[in-house]
Length: 615
Image 1: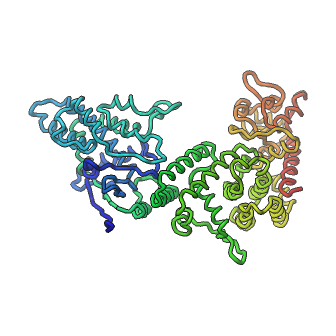
Image 2: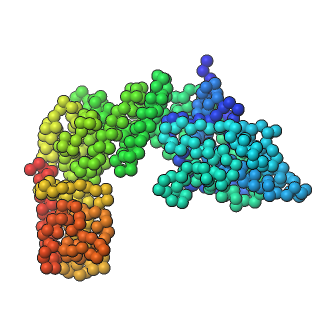
Image 3: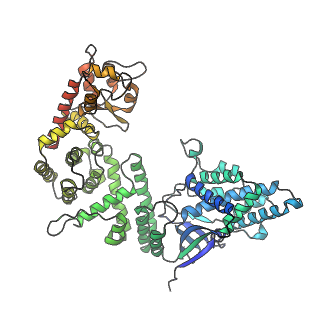
């Protein structure tokens, strides 16, 4: 017979005091330990304020949700992982400082009461952290015996596939002094000072230093308050899905609850039901590793991959187009979709994970393609529809050449979004793309047919003269990348969009020589300057290092020679910068005038216009 949910109001010390054969566990699907100094500082301030208030009430630290497993010997932390881990680190810091206080407290009658209090705190905390019996704990610290007790029992096991430092808490709990902890914990490569430590040790160090500021009497009071005057509501459940459902409603650990947390928990529960939880955990870990790489380069995170997968599933299931052909652009939230509207993907966790791994691998591969890099300078929503197209391919079959036609179609449409007043949610963009997504995801539909749809849609809804005028007025940045890309195609020049790339104003928009530069450009006043400086024709791409080096130099300096110990356009690999060098470097005192900006803007506008309209 299934057990009922069991809520209990417990002192922190009683909540953390486990039976000999019981441990807290952090399930595979849980997030990594994420609390930082800011969270710990707030916790510490809350406790201090409570102690100083001398209130007879108890301080409430929220709800803890536990999934009981293996005959109640494993307490899976569904909600409360962050707080539980932090409480253990705090208690360890209190224990070390309490031991120091006991050793320096006199044995005289005046100090007897304080000494007894500190000894009680020592026994209480060691009983919690190490499940030690009172009679096994000496009144005063004994390094040899204490070390044996510190290695005797494990209070928490971390199985999270998202946690890189699973044993870090155990390392801290097993030492008897601060210096040993600092020596043994993980040191993260290439990080400096406190950044080289994990959240576990940084938070432990924070508490240790804060406690060091207290008098022995204050230490005694705050240690007693934490274990015996602070409370949580412990809710035990014996069904993981039931526990997760409560988690959705009662998340109280101070961190935002992401859709991916809930969905990964549902997936793990589904895998557990069919006995494939290890296979799923391995796959989810692989997915996480790939997504970590994608996050570093700004391509995707787990929630965006889930969103792209939802778009794809809804498309292939014809959920966005009715039988009459009406387009439904209303998009449900991720959590609601996968846990309420369509539970089928989550019911097959291995397949869903494999599908997302496939998409993530493709994103990793195409992230180096220049045309994809250009597209990603535009509206983020382009990724949703490009991802559905990617599902046509296996990772080994995809190439820059075979994705270029569709990527270019999306660049054309999102360039129009950049230039017009209509927003993404209008029928010209979102509605059209939802309809076209059914073709993008269908490998039986040719790219030629999709290109024809884009051409027809663009020619039917935009006037080339209006767009030409908008291009001449354009002062944003996305089209600067497109102009460079199209110029490289036009001149058959090599073009690779580097990670460290700046928008360079050929005529500087600020600087010490601005008045003289304006005069050289034959600009009459500030209003005329403001209308010219951000035109397409006055902007090019330039390597960050070169852009920083030349700053707001004169045009003739930028194109004609290298500066001493610096660099210039002559060292750039970007086609437009090199073209300017070829055109101007041999001229005597070349100037960049307003007529040059106008001519360059004309050329850029015509180039982009022809691309958008397929001319």
